[in-house]
Image (cartoon, rainbow over all chains, first blue to last red; front, side, top):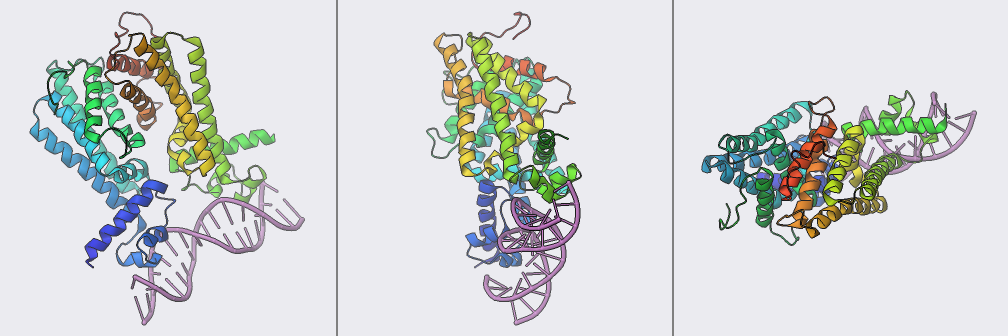
Length: 200
Length: 200
DNA sequence: CCTACCGATCGGTAGG
DNA sequence: CCTACCGATCGGTAGG
């Protein structure tokens, strides 16, 4: 079996356990047991337990940012861009909920340098939302009473998603994103996209 | 020194450390050290480390629910009630941010029976918000496209608060609650409370 | 409330 | 990848 494949299996097991129990309540032996290995055997594939957490958090940050960058490049219109950002966020979270949970809950257990790097990436990611909202305000398509709180509303809505979303729930992720966008556009004082046909 | 006082000091130390590092990354010796005690000495005041977590989470749940009950009793009008619920939530979180952080981040490390009890209390608490919104919809003062998502928006906004709020930030908690309420009423399709003077 | 300790488990390593 | 182990630390207890 390929070494890279094995490493991916280890990351997957760590992801499940970190999401379910948290980083500190998961031992390397717990992770190894998921692959029918002894605890020490993991260390032919990894250097430290924290590297597994880093791999997961780093990957989530990459996914969020690269999707946002693609959306920003594709949609010049602020309304369409904001809606697509929300949709991309929700759909990524839904597609890899465990990774999203680890990203939001466990990143603070990274060593300081890595924690700082994630804080910066998180800020960079939020900038895509801030920027879309700011442009909408500049063009008078969004009329929030407070631009900063408008951004906070959007981030609260999409970030809290992982707390209640269940894959076997009644609504698929894209329908949830649609509902989110209706609420967001209303809160922003934008015309609701009723009768516009399928939204982005 | 009174035993109850000492126990409160232990809870306070646990609260700070659980909020900063998380439950599993905090040892009983860490807590004891905050009070210049030896690790074992804590056990003249407590029976188990988990009891400290329970005390904090239980107290937060009580605070949320008792404040919501008082608000519900005081404000029959759904709009006023919803605004007051938001305000009470934000002000409690701001007044004891560490406890709010422990409540949201660490409750899942409780043993199953206690975890279940908290899940029920959480649901009971959200019912105050759901009910206020439902009554507003019944009376046509709220016109959301989806009542369930309207509630989700409110809960997302107020629950995510602890993630970014800093006591030394530019806005006091009651001003933040005011901004939240403006956004919420807009998202609900209610008339914005502009020119109504001080809101609740 | 301290000293001294319990058995269990932790992340990680050596040697094969 | 396993066996066997390292020192450190965990939550908790006994006895004073």
